[in-house]
Image 1 (cartoon, rainbow, N blue to C red):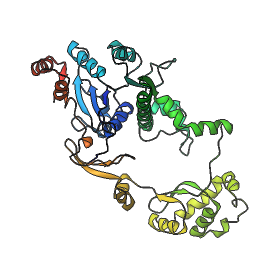
Image 2 (image 1 turned 135 degrees about the horizontal axis):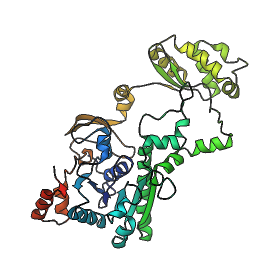
Image 3 (image 1 turned 45 degrees about the horizontal axis):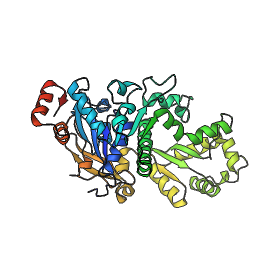
Image 4 (image 1 turned 120 degrees about the vertical axis):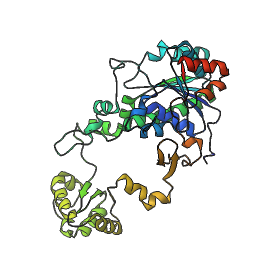
Length: 392
């Protein structure tokens, strides 16, 4: 079980939906914080991000581990009253609506901090609270396009490519988590709460800081870091190759049986290989087609050349190194069945029976949370009957 819970005693009001905000709140839960997920009657829309099984999909399971869910209709007097009580008692509030939405309900930072002066209030937005784009609808893919992210990887026709996951969302969640921790430390020192805007746009820019600077310093045409590098095809698969130093280049040439390339006048220095990248990579790729992946990986490993077989997720989960460091555990999820959950760096792994390995369905803990707020049974029943609260 995960017994390291340094955030025990902290109350988190997670009003956020999607991936970024919920992911940051999930990591707070893993640290021991009491996280109340406040979601509408039809649930957080992130529950629909992919194939759904009842109330869950893969994304909703991951970003809600260890939380308790209460489902409220904020358009009802009763539902809004409960939401405000949850906010009033929280140490941290996380929301991810467009600027101005929370203010309509009296749940914005100004309203909440008026009575909860020590609140750490974090808003997840697409482009930030100010500026001409602040109310634009946003997706991870849109920010990948806007921020320049998609220019880092292009297909053979020069088409910019989107990363095959909501990478900026998850990164924003990580940045938001560390900012909340920083704010909690600051509150412990100066006794003051704070407001933070964590935008997807700024996350994408911060993560790409080196690439943006590189673009500026090299006139918009940055060179590759070294050659040979990239994906090469074998007779039965693919290998990711990363040849950084001269000795690695020489070793690669020896593995390929192309010692003639070591001192070749077009390829015998890093700069020459970069200048003649297309030509040397064409030669190298032709050689790799002559054997299978296992044969090449064995030879490259023996020669000390940095590489990896391009794995599927099944390959990764079955790998002996992955198992040796307990990279993931199999968990019996009560809704979707047995699932592999990777361990978050710095945290204990997820274990069966641990509440931190459980992701709630919509409104699973509504009654429990209401009782914890001091609401009487008759009032709870009345709110459920009226549709102000959903309990499953």
